[in-house]
Image (cartoon, rainbow, N blue to C red; front, top):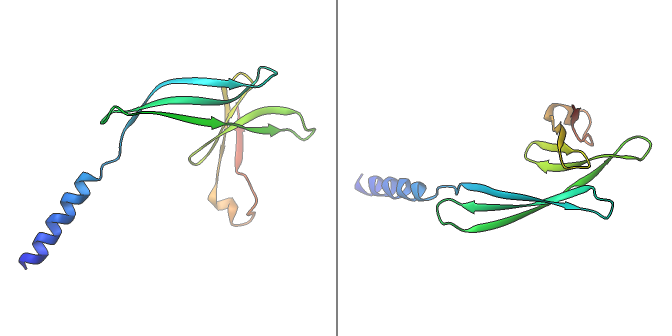
Amino acid sequence: MLARTLIAAAALAAAGCATTDRMTSLNKEFFRNDAGKVVGHRESLRNQRTGELVHQVEIYSVLLNAEGRVIGYEERVEGGTVLRDEEGKAIGARFVDLRSRGTNMRTEGVLFMY
């Protein structure tokens, strides 16, 4: 009984030490191509607990219409993508709906533009 109690206490103590780090955004710098369109960004993040500085780079994928013209750029985020215009402003979102994946495995998800 004592051994089980010690093991349970050690497991709880180890779980308490495994906290996730909170990162705060310091600034965001956009990347532009030769035509002046925003195609990505670099974000500076700081760990609140340790003070460590991290740079996160994100390159957007091109979103084309049926005629092959560029209508925007997609930034991948958890659960889908954020659709951005040529200036980097968020103009829509794509949500990955797992229910539609059962009938069409190759679907990219529902796209909402506003």
